Image (cartoon, rainbow, N blue to C red; front, side):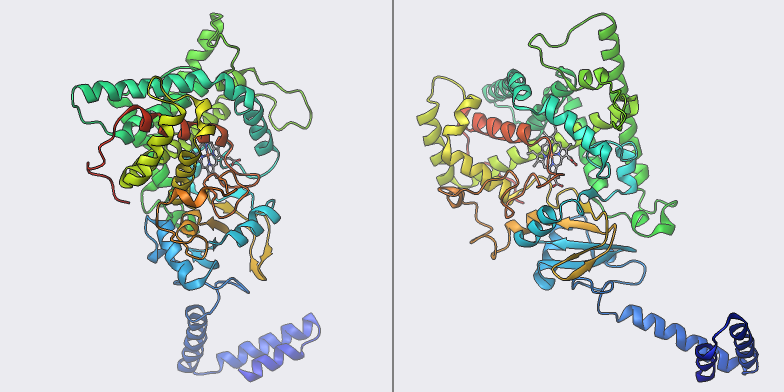
Length: 508
Ligand code: HEM
């Protein structure tokens, strides 16, 4: 061996190198086969030992658990990924690394480091991790939620913020919100009269789904008394589950074609049903426009109008007009990102408040004082309900609808807290874990609205210890709607009925 090393290191010209290599080959072939086999085995063993006993996931990586060659840490992760990652943060600290298959990943679980990556290095961390399942669901990651950071993302986001989520657009949308909440109260009232059991999770989901359908096409597409509402909920859940699950095919490149967990196959069926649904909506709208029908008398534009009317002749604009696929991608984003997130927060709010009779009592006293017993809650009441707002913040803290945000991805290699983070690393920000960390919150597991009384902390992305809507460029674009809707629905439910908290209540 020494001889081979010596040959290579003393060669100075290509010809000399060729000569030395051929001498080395002759030397090796002169060795007995058993010696050659022993040399090769030792080199392989050394190589394997180096992989197995390496102390870092990559050069100067943050600390972190070392997984298996090829599979990385995947064999130890479950479908409760946020919980797995939280447990690991207790061992490895507020920033750690792991390999998911072949891919580098970092997990951040402290407000300070979250601020560093999502505020000070926001541009570097502003793309998303795109998996095969995501490609399937989002028309090849061309719509807003997953499109890589750049000109197309900027344009899509600008259209939504100016046309659909501006203060004026949200004001014009207020009657639709009121109608949905009133319908919910009415259906619960009928159920209470006939002593029929209701599944509050399903009912609040239908409210969110109809609100999104109003945003998209000004129609109530889901009837709470029919099973279609539940079906859409199942479809959204299926998508969220598949999109959130670590997929071997994404993380180990040679498995891509095989779809070993069948996730792509599972999601394609749901995607086909959604696609048919969106096709029908677009066709109906094109037909209505041909017939000169106007959907909204109050001048509010819905999403289909905004996208069908959009035309740009600006040279720099990424999109000159929206194709059918572009529109379907955006509709899918709205239904997937905007329904379960809002309704599950309402569901958790009810659960936590009813679990704590003393909190429930304080909310009722406040509602009595501000709203009284002669009318229903109005959106304009919310700003006067200080204790109730604190209870909603506490719900957002303990039960963020998207526990790991929508995983980000680095656009380039960077340095965080003195560690290397490679380009295209998967980035998890565990907001669910931060809520359960006693270094961030005293008595973190307690549902205590009082912690927000007299405090400036809010959920809108400025305070890094509580980020249910994320923060920075890629924060939730639907926050103004989601935030209003959660407050209004929850306050209305608590005010309109007397809830029996001895009933069976869900455990986390
Ligand atoms: C309580 C309700 C909601 C919660 C908790 C929530 C949460 C989130 C979170 C955590 C993100 C990722 C943020 C980040 O990476 O920093 C996000 C992104 C997003 N959300 Fe929401 N969301 C809610 C309601 C809505 C609604 C009602 C809509 C639309 C109608 C919506 C549309 C979106 C979109 C389009 C994005 C992607 C934005 C981008 O990548 O630029 N969300 N949401």
